[in-house]
Length: 76
Image (tube, rainbow, N blue to C red):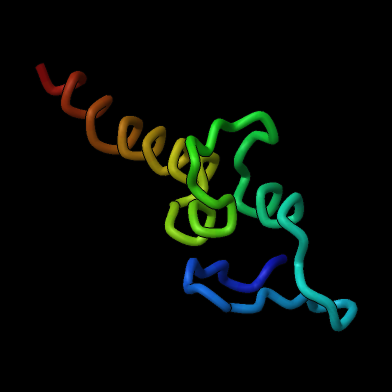
């Protein structure tokens, strides 16, 4: 697992297994962004540090739907 990714300028993201900085592709993979994501001029380091990982957010949304909304539909 990765340490928390932060967007602060000059922040170092160091690997746990060897003493070197995490590469941009490793940040993208760790943040669960697709490799073909369009950053539209933003730095991948900045965007991955400022974002909730898309896969995690999708799972949270599915659980909210399942636990809240599906139960409400069943109450009708």
